[in-house]
Image 1: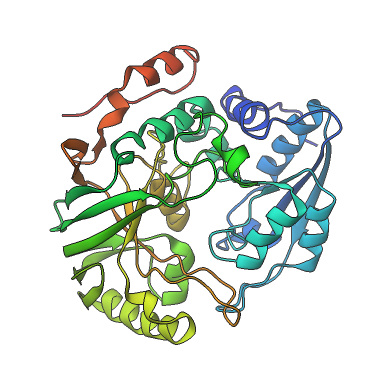
Image 2: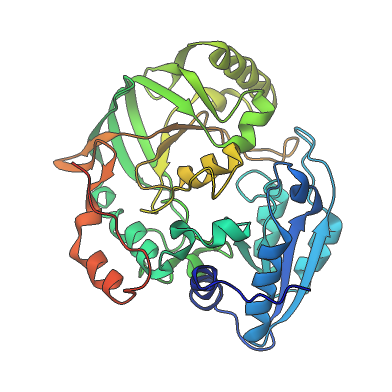
Length: 384
């Protein structure tokens, strides 16, 4: 048994997770879920040390903690919501999930059951000891929640024209409508909206709610996406030759590029056969809200997992490649993303991003919150 305690940097993160995000209380039943294959290099990246640290801190708050290691293979278009996991959730107050395979964004049965059983679901992104010690994980939860809150401001008076460009050649124009309608979004106090809107509370805070658009026209170039769907498309989560999408009236009319573009077209045709013509819509985007969501190769040797972290950075905008819901025969949510990393976007008369910098990070409300946590990472200085 190790005689070493939890490092201070990891403890900083765990305090934010347990006390500020989950808000663990004495007597709570907490289940920690992880995939055993993730210990040996699979996509379900994790380590036993991180699991042990989480258990220790939750237990120190008076919670009853159980650890559930699962081992099952994800099968394309037949992704599994394990009945054993379902049973564990049923009697738990909190499920802390380290699994990359089991996610609410794709598996509809899992998402729907959260609202039935009323278990708090925490998608934990810092799944290893190294990641728990990163600046990304240590950033105050309250600060990132405020970024999400104030980043809504430019979208609060729809409809408004927008223009989006980036150095890869993206050049889109359209009309921004509003964040997708859901209880508590937008306008809810920055530090409570997750709990009043759903039972899904990620750590660290993840992305801004989706923005609906219409009359989108132009070209969109991207060279990375979230890895969950990339592996089923048959491509890496980042690649060299950008994919170009020609958009007319909020619809993808041509997709071109290298081998990745060809694979994407083939996959979209397969998805069209399952969920319909909506797979060719191009009408929804959202973006990362974490100013420190970047980790080094030393902190995270898994390239796909670094892409997951990068996805939540404030410089990352992603469009939904297709906008079709699941159905009775296909009980999954298509959530293929096209990510760009250095956007410039003007909404109405407001410059929201400038060369990848989310301009609301200059808001004095963020400086006030950062001042409450002088030992923790704050808003990085703007590089001009």
